[in-house]
Image 1 (cartoon, helix red, strand yellow):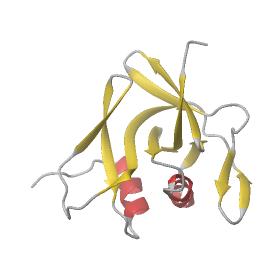
Image 2: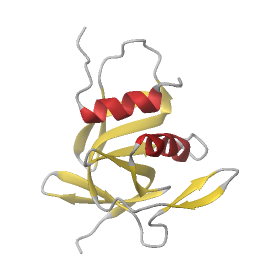
Image 3: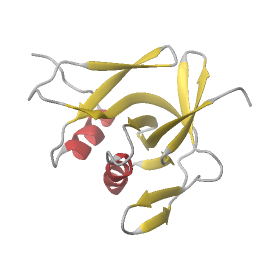
Length: 142
């Protein structure tokens, strides 16, 4: 297998595309992933995500020791079906808080590839908005 990098991130699969959730420890990466999984997302990796750059695309997958497991604080480790390697198409940055009601598009560069990025909206509909945007397009028109 080609070289890959391991980053501190949780990743879910929605509609065949990976959403990479980044942020410091305790910022809610696994919690957001669990909310997305309750809507139907698949788990790619929790806490540690391996990333392979191939042909201008970043592909996320789980280290073998944690594959198919996600931590639910206060509950324990949950076993779930592994979504497998999935191309990354969006980043959620929980270290940054979205201040604007209708924000301008953000981007996040990872291993030389620029991806669309959402900042933490800190509201009850954040997971649902991510889910819907991954099934269609995120309307960022004025």
